[in-house]
Amino acid sequence: MSTGQPKPTRLETTAKRRQQILEAAVMCFLENGYHQTGVRDIATRAGVSLGNLYNHFPGKHDVLVEIAALEERELEPFVTALSQPRAPLILLDTFVKTYARYLAVPENVILGLEITGEAIRKPDIAELFLTNRNLLVAALAKVLERGVHAGDMRDDLVPQDTGQMILEVIEASAYRSVLENVPLRRVRGSLRDFIAAAVRA
Image (cartoon, rainbow, N blue to C red; front, top):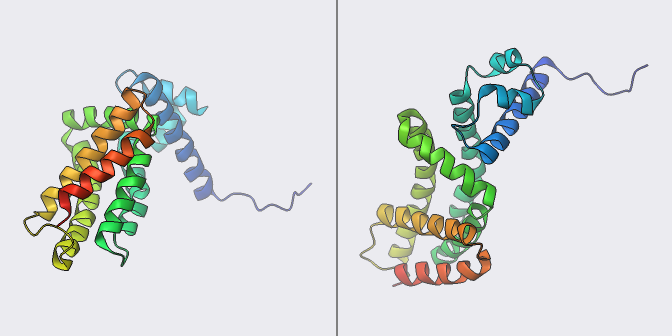
């Protein structure tokens, strides 16, 4: 008896299975760490056979490459928000608030550290994740340039370097809030004040 629902296409089924494997891999990496997770662990968690997993990904390294592509999509809203035609100081403050909130999710901290560790060992993984990070740095640099030209920000800023440092300060604050179990709201206010004071004219 027909349910009236169209049958999923082969492409849809493949995409759904890949997503299922990726989600399982992320959970394994979070719980056990990247190096302590085997391909069999991922397959078991995803509820697929080892052969089925290998049909989608040649190995664990390739799963991590796909996670890098997913991170790029997660960062797109931040890059888009920074390109809005609003006052640079307001854009910067909003970015600091929202990006700190995103980073301070414990799962994001753990996964970020796991990926960073692997990126240090594997140049191709480093390149993927640095490309994602550089998208944010470039978007921040444009906001800072606009702020300097408008006279709202210090004229001795080096936008690219300053954007990089702003990301590093946000990341460190997010990690601290998770590591020390400090509510983000207690860190975020002083973080926003610190960054604003550092760039304001």
